[in-house]
Image (cartoon, rainbow over all chains, first blue to last red; front, side, top):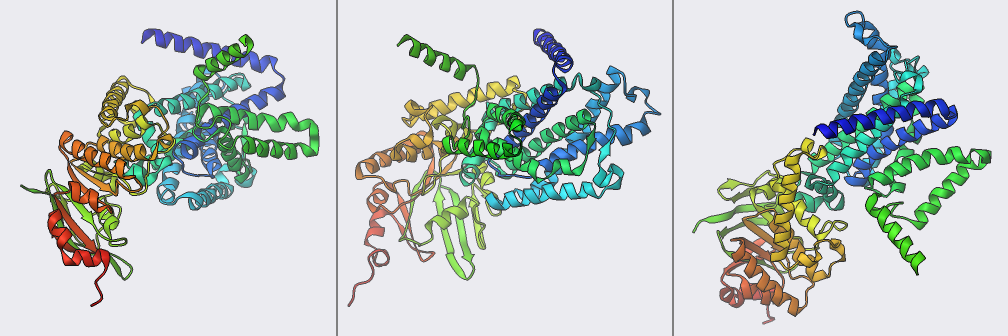
Length: 337
Length: 256
């Protein structure tokens, strides 16, 4: 146990070091893309829990992303300044103060997204398939329109001047990847237990799962709440790195993009979701030299992928040391022959 | 002998149509009872009422001294009533072993938190569940396929896996919805032997829906005949097969 803690601490320190080194040596543009890739991967993994693993086709994920971002940012910009008079440790600008505030923002953002997920999920999950998809899409828009009309968070102008809380960007990669690893790790853990199997069973056949004693409603709502919580974390990180948020960042196109990532990943695959998160964020950037044609090429890439691998890049499988060593063996056999 | 399952004047109407009308029946502990009837007689509706898929419009269902009225399917399963489906409903992309493990999860005591943290208690419990499930597959001669995808199995094996999965919930009453559907005569003989065997091995009570008269007459101790949503006859196989009402329901009345 002690060894594990030491190893964990060392890994965190190494990650922080890498993050600072990256932010100093990488061109700002590439660093921004890297952060966006990480955030997209968190979103893809979180939606994968709902769409891929539990099989509930939800396409309003940007709504929970937005709730996380707005509540987290509200803490830092609106509520913290009031409380700082009574608790001086809430002052930002020092590494300790920044960390405390970011953790509080994460906690509040996640909690708010979880509550929203519960409120939206409980009635919606009585529906299936297309009906659920339309309803979640609607709820995503409702959240955006509500934010658009709350003057306290800037309405259409959005909330700006959010302190970065990530050492001016230096620790941004650190936080994004810590959250990504945590989110992916927790999901992976769940999927290796019998409880995880019951979630897959709900995706495969709800009637049969129910008849085998699985409370399908409970599973679906839990998946929805956890997925929303993770999306909330992504929102908090976005707000505190890019320092400004507005309702139009969290529109329907973002929801559709996250859904595309999950479908492309191979529904149910955690590593696939991470790869798709990175690929679908980096590809449009890589195609930027094509100017007006880049979204065309991007769409064609997507269509070709779905035509050649309709089950997604990884299907239901996972990328790990196992598949890696299998690949090596196969290569070895080819060269030997 | 005490009745494990009692249906007291159960009615289920869909709109104006009573699919099941005033059905009373009972299944005693340890019995193997058959429920037969022509197509559309309401047999599967009776099963869906028993398992909580539908709630009865009228009447009461009692299992083990407690009412099942108003329970959801998963709650009924947790009370000890397991079922198979007429049209196979396996968890297709999961392996044979995983299919059975899902059903065994019903007895789990660990929470969500211990699952996402992979707590030692969770790992121990999962290891236990896996061991029990492998053992169960072994008893049903499915162990060789444990790690194959369930939809890759031959049809007869898929039917057997459905039974294995139902057994994994640890039921007292097993409901089999046309277990012999689509099987050839040889497979049906094997199925009859299997039903007899699991019944003794797991000290089960079995209620069986079946079309195949030979299968039903061969293994059931008591038979209910359902027609147009009503029980028209009850008794042992000999009584049933000579009852004029049953013959009329199955073959139609003679023109005289």
